[in-house]
Amino acid sequence: MGAELRTSIIVDYQNVHLTGHGLFESTRDLGRHETLIDPLLFATRLLQVRNARKPAAMPQAVLRRVQVFRGHPSVDHDPDGYARNLAQQAHWERDRRVQVTLRPLKYEYERAADGKPATDHAGKRIVKGKPKEKGVDVMCALAAVRAAADPATDLVILATSDSDLIPVLDEVLDLKAARIETFNWYCELKRKGFQLWPTDRSIRIWNTRLNETAFRATWDPTQYD
Image 1 (cartoon, rainbow, N blue to C red):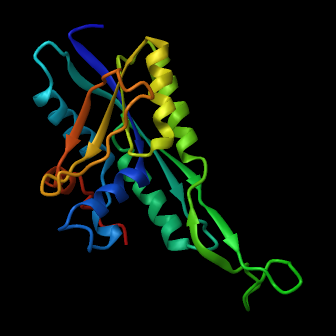
Image 2 (image 1 turned 180 degrees about the horizontal axis):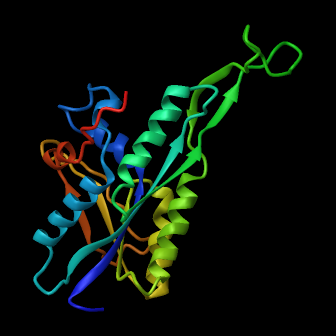
């Protein structure tokens, strides 16, 4: 490794977005669509804060790539959300360092008395509850491990507060190739935030906390309507 760390940031988009949205007092009552983050703004602020706070002996991190993983609404059940996500992907990927991967959301459906899927007057299946992300955490895990094994990457930052991804930290540490670091939103007023740690808590890895001001600075100001 040289004087600078070529950095890949793996973003569990919904986790990063909703964790920040719900943590801070001034943003939790806003519409979720009002607090969407721009991946490049997020990555830039994350590295700015990381580099400003790091110990003097720790190399500076420079952005190589941002990989974003996000659920994608169904065109049949949410055509506006489907189109909006595609527009956001195209806008964010204008910078070649940003790569957005969309994975179809998982829907559950109402059942008729005979056990078959219930349909509306147009013959469409009736959705039960809210759709859920499925497989996004697995995609984040694979991306982080692959980035760590890439000779062109010196540092992987895992951007999520999902404890299901703790094994990713363990695996990257075992690879002994790229470094691994974490991130979390942190409410200074409440002194609250959730940081991921390796399974072996005696192993210390660098974590960058971002506060409410940073959260607001990463919002995507683009109107996609």
